[in-house]
Image (cartoon, rainbow, N blue to C red; front, side):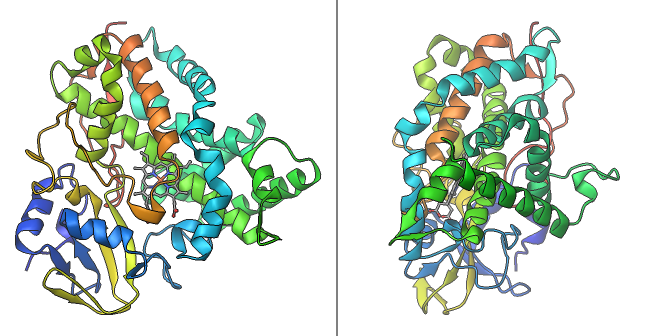
Length: 393
Ligand code: HEM
């Protein structure tokens, strides 16, 4: 029997997925009881058939994301899910998000400026990581003076995925409860402040929003803030990092993208497919059901392997080729159905702006000589710990 733990975090998990798609496309790990689902059609079903595969994480915390957003939309089913989601869709439509473009460009330029003359940098630490944190902080109306604290919590929340330092006083040495509690306290203060002095930020808008005449509870508001931090930051960081990795390892692509910027959005969709930042999502079977030949009992926890679905040769011809012109490209990197990523337009916009800047500002961009690439300590998130690059300064 194939065992999962040994293959959890390699830089190249794709051959393992392929083996599983061919030999055990629906596989129950006897130790954990988890059902692992590997084929495109099955993953698509598990993600989108919400009446059969529930997102409610009853009590448990298989995603490791804490209790803070137990009440948030990613962990709820209809009808509550629809109500919660309707409150925030307005803030994340492509049109609303497009308005952020000038500011995202400005932040990108500010982040790149110190590196420009150096000729080398860690692209993750200096650009891909801070950019989405700053954008989401501004969207939530976090004052610039608090940005460092905000970033520490954000670091800490995702530290199960991306290790932070263990020095005393650093977030990496805090325990999880302390960070959650501190952040909750901060947001409570922020919520109270916005209640008194509403602004044009997302927290103020959420405070004003109502479902059937009722406002969101403070717990729901807190959950939403935490969800945006977790769902939006690390993922976008890794889309940017994975894009630079994929572009630099395929000869001629950077030149093509430089000559034809209209190709960039397609190339980013291919990055989303080829190195999906979110490799897997969880569900719980709400009723007895079947997946292919396998009977799944009600209550069974499942892992839908998005990273595997996106390499399924039955859906994508020549699936292991990185093809920036791939069409159609119906990848599942943002999920599917009612939980389809709320932040997809924002993630696409940020990545587009960041990559455009990288391509035009860092001529001759390449992996730094001798760079050793290591994947982050997570089987759910696909991204690099560091991405040393160099260019002709
Ligand atoms: C490349 C970057 C991103 C990737 C790959 C990604 C991936 C995903 C995936 C796979 C889901 C579906 C979860 C499920 O089916 O259970 C999802 C949901 C979600 N994402 Fe993203 N995400 C990204 C960026 C963002 C950003 C920037 C934000 C917000 C600022 C965001 C906010 C959310 C939220 C709120 C949900 C829950 C939606 C719901 O349950 O209705 N994501 N994301």
